Length: 307
Image 1 (tube, rainbow, N blue to C red):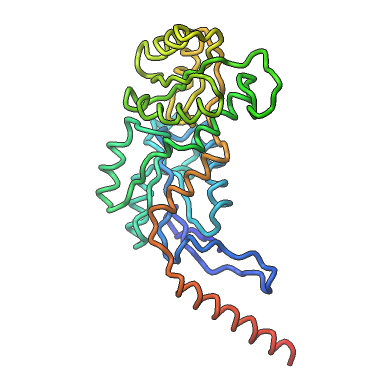
Image 2: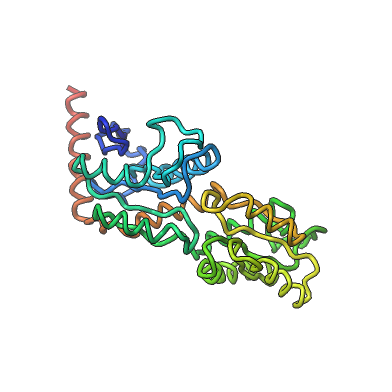
């Protein structure tokens, strides 16, 4: 499928595209029914160089995961100082309004957060005005535990594969899983923390970066349990957290920290699967009919060519 922008609207529409013919062609994934709503990725930050780079890469992953899905990023309103160019970025409200004006189905809004976050209440209110659906947050989920594990290994704080029996001198013997969104976010992160603990075979405690004393208390708890080399592991994609919070937590705790999840491929996969989960099921008979029509068309084209 190819896409083309509606004049005056940032949301693309589905248009017919050429497909390779023959039995060796790459089939399109059947999960996206024709006429499905667009996916709007709700970014809990104004558009800026850092947030744009992460968001654009994640949407690229989503499109590669699901051929035919229509995507757009909706940011929080900014003050114009984030370095965006006019017309390049849009707020969620603008995207929903453009879809309504163009007569398109209300988009599915996927919040770019791993758990509870302060911007979700306003997002639900906004979506309700346009009859749009807001999905659940991306976590807790095993793929997020995988992503945190990889970021820890990249920082030299964990083995990339615990099945390998080599040691890392800087490996953490306890992990504080840091997130933002208050105590609710920390509580929800505890589930991903249990999955991470199973992967690392070390204790994991969740803490909220935006709750004073939460990280310090978590580090103290790990040390009471016997941890001598605790580390911080952000359960943060990036745009939803102030980078100063991450730096301050590492400095005040005296613990090394892994990087945020960023555009780790599993995060893009989660966005795609979260969107797909709320779409109506595809009718198998309709798929079979479409395939039969295409096969008949190809056969007829072959006969004409032979003549």
